[in-house]
Length: 311
Image (cartoon, rainbow, N blue to C red):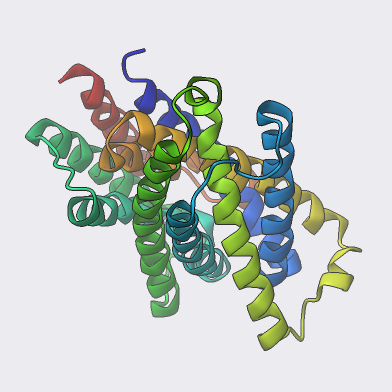
């Protein structure tokens, strides 16, 4: 099917929009480390269940040592470092502005894809990326759309930059790991399990993310939040469950599938439309007004996305 990777990427953007909103709510209730220990644990269980049902094994069968190493590295960079920065940006500047900095992820992805994968982008794709990212920036940098109207704190800006870097590099490392995974599967078996390999790859990434978050939770501890106390926070747990399902389970799994069918830079750019999609629900949930500039940014982004299909 033409543009399958692009369509999957747009679906991922919708999934990540919901994940961002639920993650902000959950992080404020449970704390970043507790939230992510639960999140990674459940994402791992969901991924194992999916693999068991469709492949017959809860573990990523046929994955070799090199596949594991690349995907574990992707999990450390993307799930641990990137998500640690992202969730802290939600707490300091909110999910709407946190997603602003995620528009830089395509640039990081393109740079790392050039270095690690040797991928190049045509001028048409670069133009589409520029228009899309420009529209997103216009929409989410509208100060009239914030309640406080104050400059963003430097701490939040640094968290946002770290989140974008983590996602960009993590996606490229995932692509490398997925390519190795596909090569590991016997040729006669590959047609039957091909579509589930991205979810097996995501399972390995979840292992790395869970080990890192739990280790740092044990080392650093938490005065405000603990795993045992979090079990009594019903709203926080419900938000966490929703974030798990829409984020590391569906969203990331399909993001790995997207980079299998299109260039990593293009997939990442389409996934970056999340800041546009988050405008309306942010208005409902957090009272952030939608201004004319925000609407203009959304229109520009839609035009940019359409260029991927029209040029």
